[in-house]
Length: 95
Image 1 (tube, helix red, strand yellow):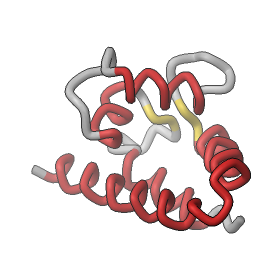
Image 2 (cartoon, rainbow, N blue to C red; image 1 turned 180 degrees about the vertical axis):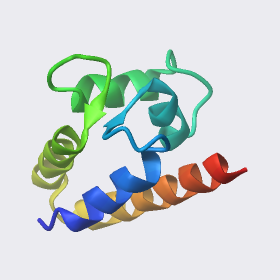
Image 3 (cartoon, helix red, strand yellow; image 1 turned 30 degrees about the horizontal axis):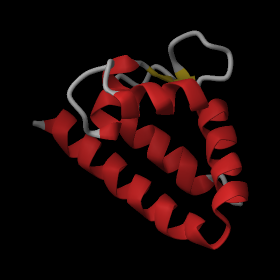
Image 4 (cartoon, one colour; image 1 turned 90 degrees about the vertical axis):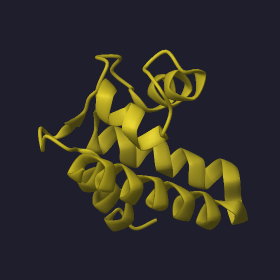
């Protein structure tokens, strides 16, 4: 798997360019109302390997690598959906 799409997604979602996705950025990425949303919690629990409440680019790469392994042929569609969500998140930040 090429890391480029994941790094590009990360750059779009990391609004403050801190190098980590914080709760608000994750909420914007997932597209739900708040950090207590079950989808946001599931993503954070899965992606935040060191459990510091933030997701680094390396953690995001690992998350997507695992998704690629579990989804097989369905991975391309999943990745495209996530890329679209990242673009939408980036547009929301610009507003």
